[in-house]
View (cartoon, rainbow, N blue to C red):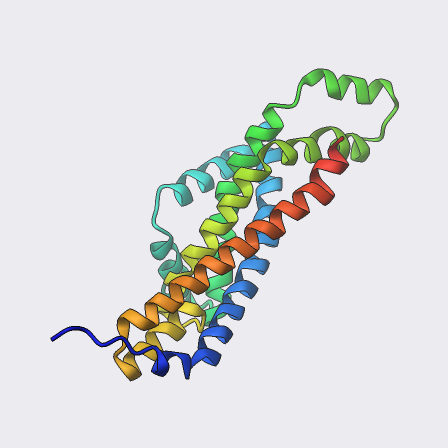
Length: 222
């Protein structure tokens, strides 16, 4: 018998999917801000070889980049409570996203910093710029401008990877989709709409990050 498509049971639960999508965006926003911030610190420490923190960040980056995000999430959510650290589902999800994005951002931004000619720093010193001004205008913003597309892609990858947070009952989009599918057994329809929502969120975030890059990063680095 041919499969009978029926999207109505899924459409009737659109509110659950939209709430899950909104929560995914909230997780991504928090994770992106804190993760990129951590990446900036790590990139500076590693690019300028600030000891002993450079070695610590090096171990951290290799550890995170060479282990699955799901294992990192489980370690935080199930492992930390074994040590007496109590953490909720959403806190574990945010922490895992921050730690994961921070590691990748460290290497992405470090590549941008290393691409800055040393002569620019010497020129900044000759112009009597303060260390903060030199860091902001000569190092950080030009470096971010060089790697912003790669950094934007990594943020989207982390957003898509947040789907595994449903494994610890974080009520994001995939959790909502699994819940709806378990009630109506319309797997194709449920995950088709879920896929469409993830695509829309990825495109939305891409456009937002492109606008931020043009408005604040590229313009400020000129």
